[in-house]
Image (cartoon, rainbow over all chains, first blue to last red; front, side, top):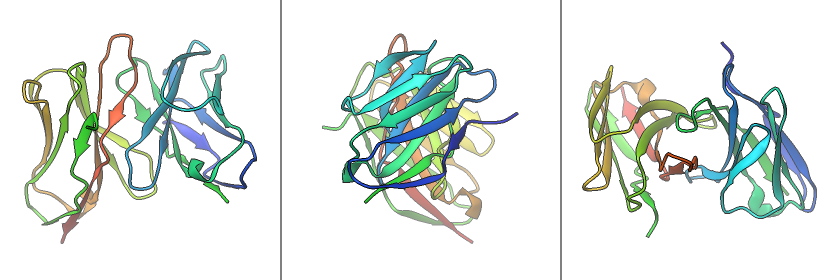
Length: 111
Length: 112
């Protein structure tokens, strides 16, 4: 049974660029949440997608947007990248919204 | 005051020791509680989750929740070098609020 998968593993971008990160949920899961984890910090909730709609959003600017596809996979898009966007981006999937299982993450470096 | 407080450590113990990891929280709305283990440069791995006050045991791990004191703990018995990782507590309100709020994590090293 495949767990949560994310791509790419690593990404290097420059300030002002845009980036798209991808996530495939665990088999049988229909809900995808995205988190940002800065070095030495716990993950911070960005937003959650269910039935192809954003169901809840954390305190992140509109530069952060997402999408969920009919097969439950999801994308996170970040526009106008800032140096402070450098972090590990984590995708978590769930069937019930509470027990969330995380993928390995995408490490984004903004230069 | 942060919603969830967790001592970042680091915590270093000898192999076989009992480890106690703790978090406190301020938001009375939190109804479910989780512990995740995160190895360096990897995603968090779910260890334990519980909805109620009291203890929940799974192998060498015991999760304890005291809602009246807003305090949760994770105990690791017979700790092993493979337990060396960062341990994150997480909690959420449940119902129609799906956001998990995490502590900063405690870095644990178990020395052989």
